[in-house]
Image (cartoon, helix red, strand yellow):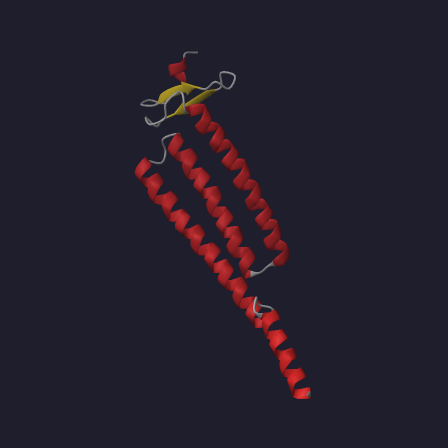
Length: 149
């Protein structure tokens, strides 16, 4: 089988240095020198984000709280970013759409993380164990001591 038989019409076929593993990449911006590194990066990103997402789902299942939901959604967005990267590498997602989606997901992750911090902070304030609690406790104990004198 010829290397050109591995590509779809209009695609360039690149054979990586990983034991002659054929990779079909449709994107013209991927050179044969960079393709193995792109492939390895996408595989590692996929494995890492899917693992983190599964850990997040497990934690969400155990805790069942809004902060855990927000973190799990952020991890899911990271998985989606990897899927978009694969789609771009094989030519399914055009580069302009890739950038639009990736930056949109970056913004979404940032909003989710800020929402998690805000939600956690407001829950701590309601419980009375916020960061200022030691200072408040010390001030209250000094007031009590002053009243006893």
